[in-house]
Length: 406
Image 1 (cartoon, rainbow, N blue to C red):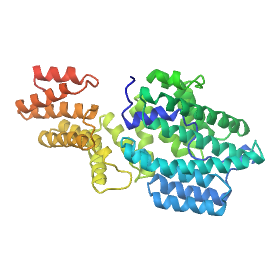
Image 2 (image 1 turned 60 degrees about the horizontal axis):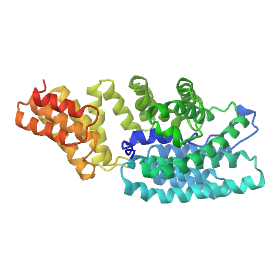
Image 3 (image 1 turned 135 degrees about the vertical axis):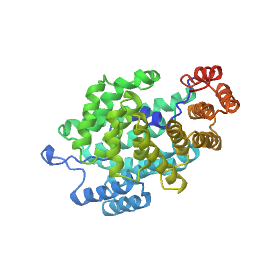
Image 4 (image 1 turned 90 degrees about the vertical axis):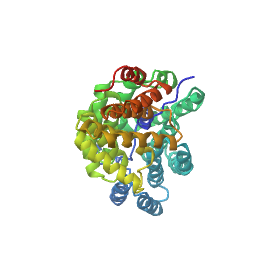
């Protein structure tokens, strides 16, 4: 059986290919004014609502988008944006099935309303760009929800169904692209498809047999499109930048380039836990451990304060990262406590068998060795060997059993 994709960031990465457009873009005067998805007043409401959404003020975003629907109940934009609120409630909880299930019901109900509103328009005019655009986006997000919950051999049917939805969405978006070829917001979808069509089969070979509609891709062109969308898009600029950061971190491993955009996103939306976490990860990966220590410490404070979006699932990773920063700075006793708490958090999540646990135990053993507490170090290394092997954790544990960490 094919193993389950575990990490939340990887899940988002895999599912991104099934979403070729994210936020509702407005086909504006840059296309000669032929098509307009949203009028000026609605566009301002979208700006206000998405500012609330990206700062994880869910109730405020809900209120604004509900008011949009009251002003024009036949337009699909408000229903789609309400579904997007539920999506961003799901994003910080991808590792917690119960919470994904909790928000998925509302999400799917809202997507149904989007599709109903779109179909009414398309029944009157099969080439209605508003109906086409939001139908494509709704189908893409529905597919993304399915794939965001991971992949196992038994979920092949669900993934195939999601792939069919995504292919239908992609065909619709290509039609929109032909109608508005110079629209910068469309670059998000084109960039994701170009990049991930080439990158996904390399990282997850099963993707090619499941997502049979993958077009020929080019990673370099895809990243260029995402950068342009992140600079010039009207409504999808934030999503384009987040997609760029996600791909640079999780596939390209280019944390140096990702850092600037991640910091920009966090500065713009300082209450967004996903942007905050991406910024912290990049700082750590470029070896700016002092800054990473400070940012991860703030993330843990927000988790403790139960800030919206700062879920307990972040704590396991944050405690590990902070422990590693303290180990590197020479605060070995505190490092031990942080690694130990990271392991305990995994047990509270009923997810002790994970790479985070294995690496936390390995580094806890390193900290014990630096403190001269060899028996406790050996106990930690043997616990690593009792878990599955994650990227040389067994080899490293055996090495440190033979010779203490220096």
